[in-house]
Amino acid sequence: MVKLARSLADDIEFSAMDATRTELNYLIELVLAVVDAGASTVNIPDTVGYTTPIEFSAMIRAIKNRIGDRAVIAVHCHNDLGLAVANSLAAILNGAGQVECTINGIESVRATAPWKRW
Image (cartoon, rainbow, N blue to C red):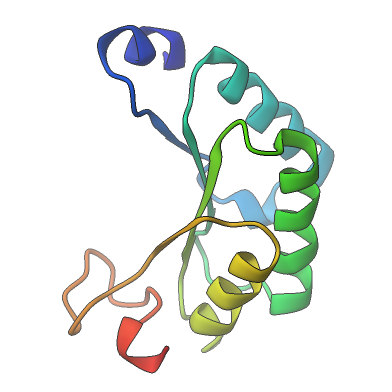
């Protein structure tokens, strides 16, 4: 699918839904495969909002170390434990180049990182 999408557009974002509950080596294997297929952005979401900044830092750093600058790492952190902003900032500090968040409370899911708290 990524190859097909890349044949139709230059900017392709792949989202690894529920990434924070995925075994890290498998997630890295998946990320490498979609980058090789043409994804220019790889989204690593905390879909259920349960990870912590220390765990998320390690995950983003491990992915960044493997893909380097071949693709942008994006994150999408849910706020179930009140850590969405902390996790998003931790991701930036460890190599993420894009954060999906809410502005003025307008969002697709009520619990994503609120920009106003940054």
